[in-house]
Amino acid sequence: MSSTVLEIKNLHVSIEDKEILKGVNLTVKSGEFHAIMGPNGTGKSTLASAIMGHPNYEVTEGTIKLDGEDVLEMEVDERARVGLFLAMQYPSEISGVTTSDFLRSAINAKREEGDEIPLMNFIKKLDWDLEYLDIDKNMATRYLNEGFSGGEKKRNEILQLLQLKPDIAILDEIDSGLDIDALKVVSKGINKMRSDNFGCLIITHYQRLLNYITPDFVHVMMQGRVVKSDGPELAKRLEAEGYEWIKEELGIEDEETAEQNA
Ligand SMILES: Nc1ncnc2c1ncn2[C@@H]1O[C@H](COP(=O)(O)OP(=O)(O)OP(=O)(O)O)[C@@H](O)[C@H]1O
Ligand SMILES: [Mg+2]
Image (cartoon, rainbow, N blue to C red; front, side):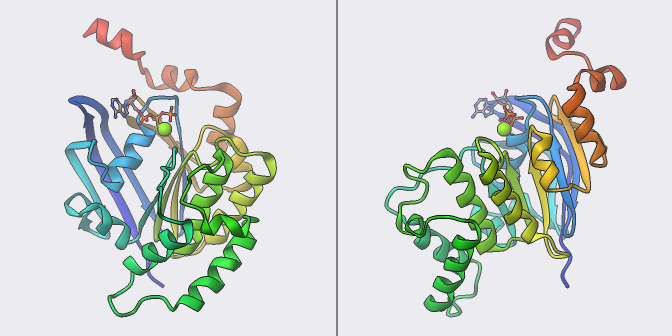
């Protein structure tokens, strides 16, 4: 059994000189499911992009470590190789590369040279996962995400998750735009990954996903920081009451008010 720890400390991230993340602290270990909730524009996707090394996001302070190794020093493809995975809020279309080819190269990129996955094994596992996720087989031969519906893209992200078996996954609004059946299938896929060797950070706006996937921890992100962490009951309270009570409880001012008072 291997245990993996993703440790984010005092992370500050800017986009075009505007500071978006203002000191994020968060630790995700394999075996744990974490949910991050929070109002629009508070930096949840920015956190995901910074972990994966998106070039537009400049880390100005703080650290991201995976088992003590400095993730910020790693190239983007290296981050995937060491076991990190991101399902993006808006998955990109890759014209000219089929879903199947994409998956096979991504799997092989994580393996040693000369130890590529045998084609038959790949096809067998792919067929199995497609069926498990109730995805049309033709999808594998279509260009990745090109012309996929919103829900099909999300299902495809979960296909990648099952195929690549990362140690730590960040799922950014994997539930957005899903119909009820798709929500169940996507949840089934994520739950299938549950093991001592897999940790997950689920960014979501809705408790409904968490009815299917029980998180061990729920974090609230506001104004570029994780301001509150608790158990799954926190998500239920947010769903019922929104975010105002947290601002009051923690004495957080609205950003405009804070700027005026500064
Ligand atoms: N490339 C960019 N250029 C300029 N501003 C950006 C860029 N990317 C993000 N931002 C800004 O950073 C802030 C945080 O955005 P982010 O996407 O991280 O929010 P979020 O918490 O994921 O919101 P949502 O819940 O709506 O997905 C927003 O104000 C957004 O406009
Ligand atoms: Mg977002």
